[in-house]
Length: 120
View 1 (cartoon, rainbow, N blue to C red):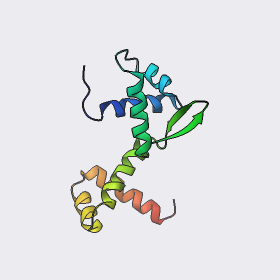
View 2: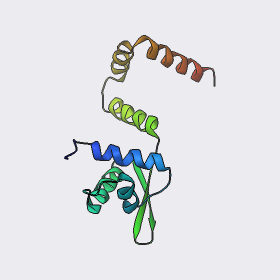
View 3: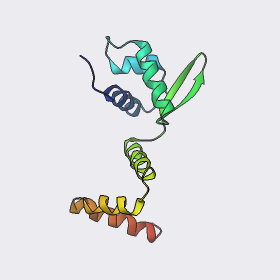
């Protein structure tokens, strides 16, 4: 079965978060438990995630061991920040974002911001 765009990257990140340890491409391929997945495909995905700044890697012998630079919420926050950084009118983007939040999310954001101001 063919995966949609980004699905394999998401699966690779999920197994790395689940195992919470640096891993080689062989480890990741084994954890994905998909015999149809070529080793070279896993290497390519890991390399792409590294180039995007999502994974860090360390040389171990002749290969690399990869690990996420952030957890899932941290990665989502980085994506949000990247979108915000690409906009010219940050204030308008933030205002529109907040105005479209469901009431519960808006309240959570207000509490987070208030806690920041209070030094907690």
